[in-house]
Image (cartoon, rainbow, N blue to C red; front, side, top):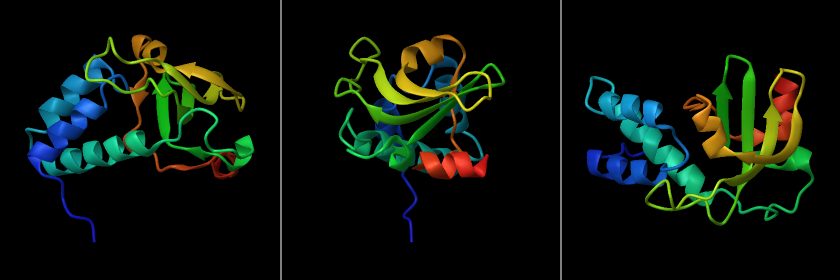
Length: 147
């Protein structure tokens, strides 16, 4: 049984999402954390912080791309999808200036299956991309099978 996150824990977790969530989405989340559905957002933010903290560093998984876990999903522009598998060791920090952007994953800009490579989260966010709060981590094979 999962223990519900407290307000304090959720706000601490929100700091860990710094650099992984854009300012507009962050503002909406902060507002939602004061509303009727605040417990959902407390729990979700806490869950995402754990996913980001435990996400493997670049080349750490040591698996074929198909077997690698996708930990985060971003969507942008109605069609573009970015699936993040690994982060750079620099993907931590209390301020956006400390955040270093290198991640590895699948970038599918046109809905054609995309290609694997390095992805800049700040670039995704600067172009209106949003972190998907409903994405469940899965392998690349599982993602492709679901499509």
